[in-house]
Amino acid sequence: MLALHKLYPQAPLYTSVYDEKNARWAQDFDVRTSFLQKAEPLTGYNDKLPFLMPLAFESFNFDDFELVISVTSEAAKGILTKPGTRHICYCLTPTRYLWSGYDDYFKSRLFRFISKPAVTYLKNWDKIAAQRPDQYIAISAEVSSRINKYYGRESKVIYPPVTLEKNKTEEERSERYYLLVSRFSRGSYYKKVELAVKAFNRYKEKLLVVGSGPMLADLKKLGNSNIEFLGEVSDQRLGKLYAGALSLVFPGREDFGLVMAEAQSFGTPVIAYKEGGATEIIEEGVSGELFEHQTEDSLLEALKRFEGKSYNKADIKRNSERFSFENFKTEFLNFVNGTL
View 1: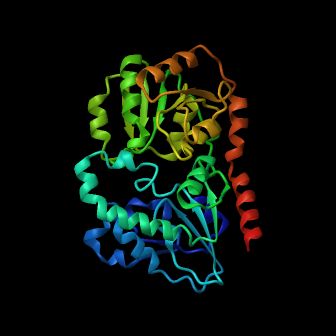
View 2: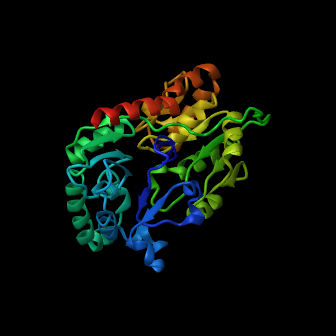
View 3: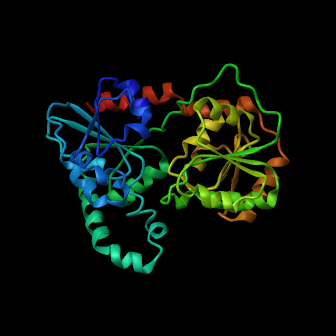
């Protein structure tokens, strides 16, 4: 969103609800919200009310615009536009809990049964809404494949950019540590953070964990004394943590995985599960290691392989240049101008 704001600084941002306190990154945007913003008791629970999101995004009027860019993994692609307005969807992934992640979100048979009417409605709406964008951009080849599989649409892959600025006074920490950066929301099962925590309970090396969310308390209880939970940190501190880490550990299957690209931009290798965006970001043996199975043993084997090798920071940084803002800017604007 911040990268697109640099490209189109005057463009307003339409969203279902907006919590200014918890979305400080949007303070420079002209934010325009849906009717849900007035239903204050509901605004904190919008993720629990997905059946209202189609109505929220369909309520917007874009008649005065030549171009609308929806950035979404859910309902924003379902906006209604007239023939004179071009709609490009920058797709983060087809709605995860309806398609690729359905089995993870609906593990309980009872929950599946109770939610079936709502899920059926949302799947039908999602397929219809997926035909509304004039063109798709996918954040990775993984997502492009899903767009084709679930929506029957073609898409252009343009990687999201790393926008974390480098600090010229950056100093690497002298202590040895691995780093994990994630969010810990209830719906983020696929991130498999607990897998890394359990593996490092056995590995004994120091692991620093950055991020916050409802699952953080459970993860703290799970981790031994060699695992330190830092919570949310500033961009400046995050940059220093990336630069000083032996490696970033990434145990989940991600649509893209921007933190892997961020770590590499600081010359830090990545140890990741060999699925999803990791296979596009990491050059094995050059910018990191990949492990085959989402198990503690498989991750531990990768950690041991990693310890036996050396990595060149300059090579890793070169590998990350594919994810620069300038590269994103060139590809995105060329695509949009060609479309228009």
